[in-house]
Length: 160
Image (cartoon, rainbow, N blue to C red):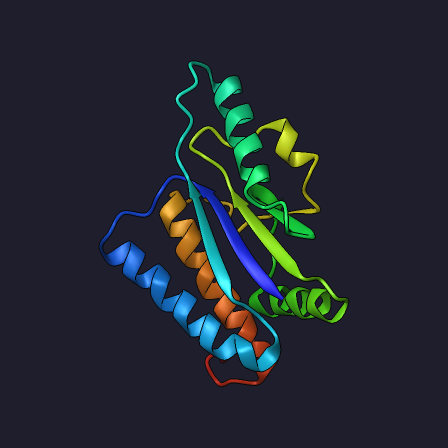
C-alpha cells in the first residue's frame, strides 16, 4: 500500500527536510517487508488568492487534483481524531489488509482546509491538538508512518 503526503507549501533545504527524508527512507526500506510504501510527497505552492475563502478553495482543488489515484484520503486537522501509535498502526494494517492501494494524507495551508476538501476525505486525523507548523506536521506524520511499519513488522523501534 502506497502513501502520499499532499501538502501546501514546500519544506526548505536544511534540517527539517533532512529529518523528513530520513523517515521517508526508513519507511521505504522497512515497508517493503510488510507491503507498505513507498511514501511520496506532493508539495504545492500556497495560493495567492486575495481572500481566505478563495485561498482555501484554490488549495483544496489543487490538493485533490494531486491525489486522484488515492483510494483512501485522510485530512490532517487539529480538530480531527487522535490515535495512539498502536491504534494508528492497526488502522494502517487494516486498510492494507482490506486492499487499499494508496492512502493520501492532506495537509492544508496556513488558512486551513476548505469545505470542498472535507467532503472528499474519508477521515480527519489530528497529530496533536496543538497547531503544528506544516513542515513539522510532515516530519511527525512521516515518523508515525515509519513507526506504524515497525509495529506491523514486529521491529523493535517502537517500545511502548
